[in-house]
Length: 314
Image 1 (cartoon, one colour):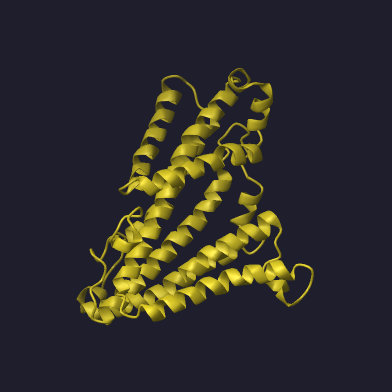
Image 2 (cartoon, helix red, strand yellow):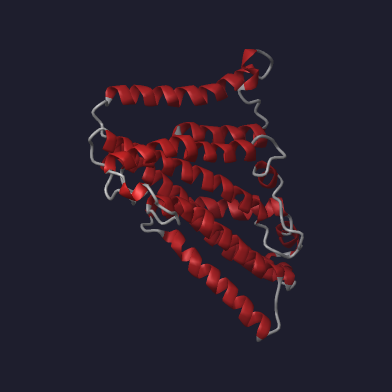
């Protein structure tokens, strides 16, 4: 299921960014080869996983759950560092632009190009995302919790600038919204596994461990995973969908001198869906471990290994 999700995201990129046909024309037509290639992208990973499972029948469920926890942690960490780097750099660019300092710093031609959302997205944001992916691999810890402090700092500088220096620009408020959205959407998966979501346990608290595992297993498969797939399917159904459209056209806010990050906030929904799905699947595997008389990943309600750990040690 997790592998299929990542294949789906990659195929979505090929279809809407590079014009690939998708799996529909596999029965004929000029694009049949590409269609078969994309279909193979779904079939081969699933077949490989089935073969691996059959050859490793004694492998405990907790090992696979720990692997999914690690994948989730890495996805969230990479997303956090991306929003951190992009927020800082885009904020500086927007400040220089609104003050008319971009030509003096970067030259007239580059200053004009930095005012185009597609140019800034490809040549500024994308390299920062790649750098964030590298940093996330080597970093340890729950870095996304620093987003709470960053939101406070961003709000505080608005208060200081506005009420002391009578200075306020659109990019300052955009930065707060950018980090605020990231905080809640990126933290959701960790909050799930840490048991931090607000809930009223009228019955669940009194269940035995086995019954709790059964509830978690059925809830993850029947409620959690379908919800995440619904977000991805609806958000990426076509070019005009709520996730694809902003990403395709590098959508920005109506304020010409704000941050050029509105399209990334649509991408936050995809990060949320993917991280929650892998977390639900890990939750399911831990529950199955309990039902099979195995030990769940340790600790039971927190990631069992960090994202940069070797998979052989998960």
